[in-house]
Image 1 (cartoon, rainbow, N blue to C red):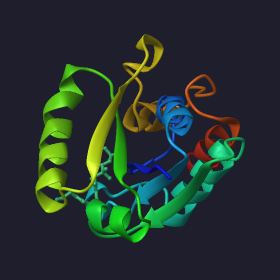
Image 2 (cartoon, helix red, strand yellow):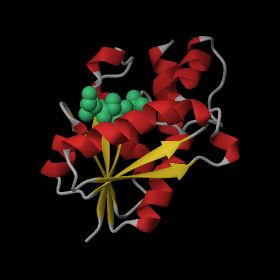
Image 3 (spheres, protein in one colour):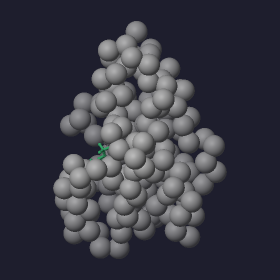
Length: 158
Ligand code: PNS
């Protein structure tokens, strides 16, 4: 049984994240979307809100479930018995940070492999921070996030 974690802060989940999760779900037997507490990033949505929005956005994917976590990613991956971390790579700007994280996680736990999935061109520029900024400025975000997320953003910035 190949079980992967797709980790992130998901503040909020976007179609870019969903693309990676969907493709990971096609490669793996089971995918756990690990929603990190990430207190240092001061998320606008609470951990439970982010997990709920991720659940609503992935409900159609039979082998995907969502779990919030605090602490180290490798500890979470061990706790859910995952052998693989799947991360999305958008552009060259992501590379250095992701390279550092993959190397660190390898150092912490050799038994867990990091695998990267390239974002398709239409999502190369998309990020949660861009979506938050658009929503904050009153711009529609429907083409970037699933409907429950767009509604939650509208409520947040009403
Ligand atoms: O969506 P993000 O914010 O780019 O995701 C980053 C995330 C959550 C994957 C990363 O910050 C992470 O792994 N956080 C958990 C804590 C941890 O293991 N940090 C690395 C060692 S310092």
